[in-house]
Length: 431
Image (cartoon, rainbow, N blue to C red; front, side, top):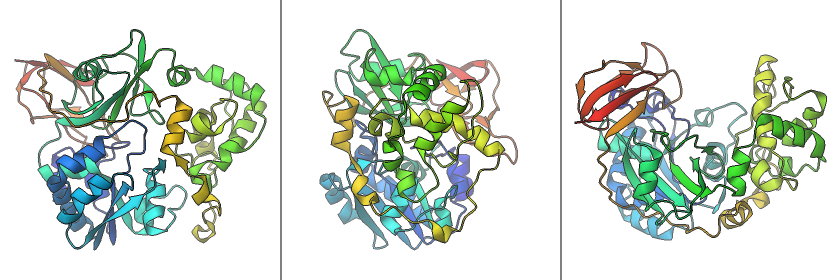
């Protein structure tokens, strides 16, 4: 079963794209399904549970067999009672639902594991270190359908005519996805890929849809989120160095700090005062999960502690500033439960309340003239092409595979066509 999952090119559909076959080699007693989807305006996982529950539960059964898990738990926000009611009659005896709070970042793997099992994954560790494996809803659906990964489900939201969740061929442009949502409702706009909190600014509308993309958010060009994601490191460093007053709000609201991990964003901000913008600076920031709460919610001065933590990671790695304490010493902060950030309050702070918070799954037929399928859509190394320019390919055909023995994932074609170009991606023209 694991070899089959590897051959289908299945990776984590809700995060960094870690190859699922590798994850399923762990032997654990409990298997967790991450259906929290805590990014504002995104609805993909909820919609898949409503419309593809049999395939998801089939994928969960297979994944539990691979890992030897005796219990499966689906973590979903308690506000989605309609989804919970829809799922409950379909659950086998060994699978149950765990209602999660409507807060951010409920979908963070470390938070999810602690909420359900009450165990804390050690700093730098993995869920298997506390006897669990976590998979995203769409990942399990792909296992259940037992087909090569050629399409991606995602929500298109924000300033569009109709916020929707779509099934798109991998390699299609984000412009085509936005057009399928009725197009933008504003003239000058920017696009966030992935989510409002942990996404990135789209460099162009020709950016391709990948296996891991979960959301496309269209916002006015002058929206605060578009401006903040567009800031340069030099700007972030200069302003942070001059303005941070060490209030500690960033640390006090940090989800990993509240789990007991050695991460203090305010200390990273303080380190800015000891060098120029191009200098390396050393801070204990290896365990920052980059959820962006410190930057987009906690900081009263609109500084960017998250980016400072990220910039400090390389030097921390070089100096070996890893956690060396006992895992028994890691314990959640006594106020952790009371510092959860409600989704509605987060949306208000982000300036997203004016946009419709919905994303029904709709069937839109796509007939792209071409697709540009990146060779790296996953954790690990890029895949090596197994096709040549001029080759005729069909949907589901293998385009590339990882080098022997390397961490990576197979890449499959999403349309029928002819290979026209090979570089960092495989461009296939429809025929």
